[in-house]
Image (cartoon, rainbow, N blue to C red; front, side, top):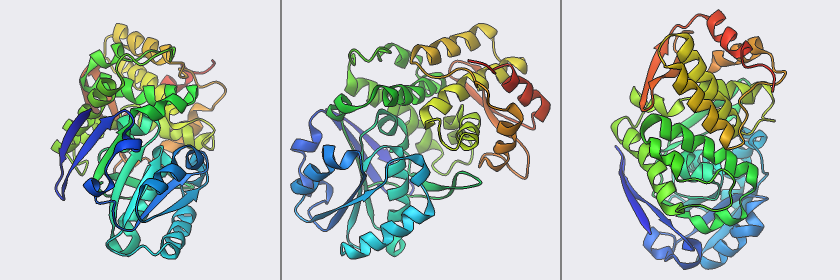
Amino acid sequence: MASIHVTTPTNQYDIVIESDLLATFDPEAYGLDRRCAVITNTTVAPLYGEALVKRLPDAALITIPDGEQYKTLDTVAQLYADMIAAGLDRSSTVIALGGGVVGDTAGFAAASYMRGVRFVQIPTSLLAMVDSSVGGKVGVDLPQGKNLVGAFKQPDAVLIDTTVLRTLPKVEWACGSAEIVKHALIGDPDLLNLIDPQQSRIFDAEELIARAVQVKVDTVEKDPYEQNIRAYLNLGHTFGHAVEQVTGYQWRHGEAVGFGLVAAARLSVALDMLDPALMELVERHVKRFGLPTRLGDLDPEAIYAAMSTDKKWQGGHSRFVLLEGIGQPTIVKDIPAEQVIKVLASLKGV
């Protein structure tokens, strides 16, 4: 078992990483012996949701559709109705059981239902384990852009059961790897040696996840409300979110982030900030995990236009997280549009 203690401006909590955790944990230890709602999706419910509800003394199962396209205010409105029907009050707990979409959507509902109720994350995808379940950001998408409505809602616990990775589809394994590559580029390069790109085995699941999570925890504790360095965790995401939006979320988040890491490295080289050899290293690692490194037939100008609603931009001025080296992220403002579009055009094709 691994455990990481997190201190935030509003609370303290533990991230517990352990195999078979869902089958052995004590609900009372995490305040789950009172009325709870387990919010999950239609894929995870039969795999783990129904069994979890049976282990809890007083819990209801609430299911949302599976997919980023359902990470909306309409889904949150339905969750409010379901939570009322389930008898949740201000002393209740919302448990998010699933990937990033479930965590973000259920977390926003928890942050706003009755002005906030307890919230526990139980991530079931590699991406959610190493990234989205940690740090307290929750929210949903609007038609104009990703994560434009949200809140900071710190969980009361994050429970990571590595056993659930056995049922993770190969494409979701790759998507989670994108965030691990990102964390390696930000602060722990050796992470790249701990994961098997062929998914034949995990060298040490607990160590892999704990080290990836530690990169995020270290950053978030220094900057919980994203006033400065927390933005480094968005490396690749300005490009990635735009790709998701332009494709109507046909690209998964991890796929778009993988491409975004390549684009960010290439833009860093174009600005004479990064050694081209390091750019090639980034691209090799992204490709190694089966993630896209090219845009196909997507329009570079449409992707740039979609960036106009990126939360990191301020007053209409662009802000990109780029690299000066491995472990050296930085924020660069006001890059000319034509330079960004030129980099995107260089990544056309397959």
